Image (cartoon, rainbow, N blue to C red; front, top):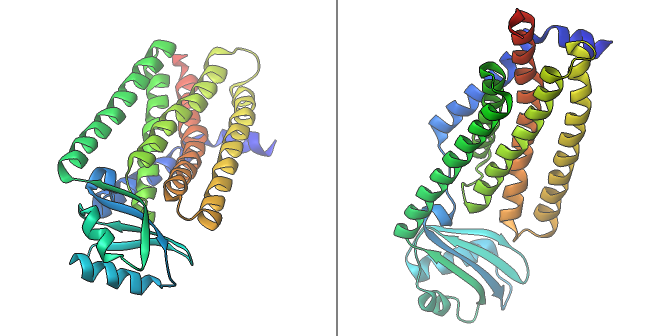
Length: 280
């Protein structure tokens, strides 16, 4: 009964995800998004340490040897280190700088031309995915307001996830773009579940149909958030070199939480408002 009473006051709840989305847009406008070396250019190397060295010493060794200040020691322990440099580095020169200190396990460098082309492709991939998703939603529901509610919820998920990336310093990379594309698909899943149950079924009241959809949707979201939280904890505490996996998990956790708010507060509120206005 409490949940039914809570859902009766749905109109003010629509504002919650909208306000969070506006805050996310403000974060993106003020802070922007960091970019990984795939999209910014630079060098990433995994090292096998030959002798004990701390983070500051390794940073100084590489910075002085290469004549650059754009060195970031991403992770380091007794035997391995991961180093990122903000420019394209010659592997032979880098190897000579590390001579006697570390061996190079893997080395990846991306020049500015290639990174610019990759960024353009990423923007097109996100735009095309969103356009095809929108067209599919309109074909399924063939009604403007319910379709726009689904699209608005998906857009809100992506913007909040991007705002979270800006807030927590998660770089935009090929890995995090993959997470954003996954979010578009997941958002549509939960929104279509809700819209189909509420709009097309006839048994029970709107609130009862919404609660029925919510039980399934929240179970799906809780399972997905739990799985991503486990992935994040494992990578951060046990596989620190797998930073890409941690970033994917972090982006998905933020986006999935945003999806809960956008779907069950905003999309559901818009649907109820639409149906109770007598247009359906």
